Image (cartoon, rainbow, N blue to C red):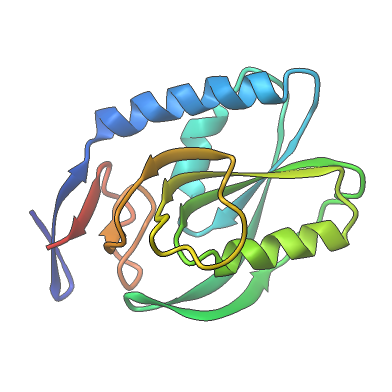
Length: 175
């Protein structure tokens, strides 16, 4: 168990399980983009650790960039997306792979997919470490999924509770 601020979290997905699944995802993504050079768009802040580990497991050329959007306050999504740090690369005619730490309601993902379609991308796919299918209300299901989890609040491996807990090498769920 770990305590972050005023909440207790219990172990949920081990570092080894995460590492193994990311290696598998790297193979899947490499096969999908074998003859392409996709632009991987990492959604900050939560996906930075996932992105760093995943790109080392992809054995085809990729370009990586980072954007930042926000839809969370405390433990719940606000339902509104605020773009904080925008995209600088030209994505017209490019294959895009959005990297997310977690897809739950799909609000952020829906916003991103619409924005990238409007910019004239060739293709858009999504890879997420965690997916909460029971919570998803919007957008399409991600193409590459690390783990499907129940609709519980989780921290660690880049995910936070009020800015804390990102450094944990495993994923913990709210007790």
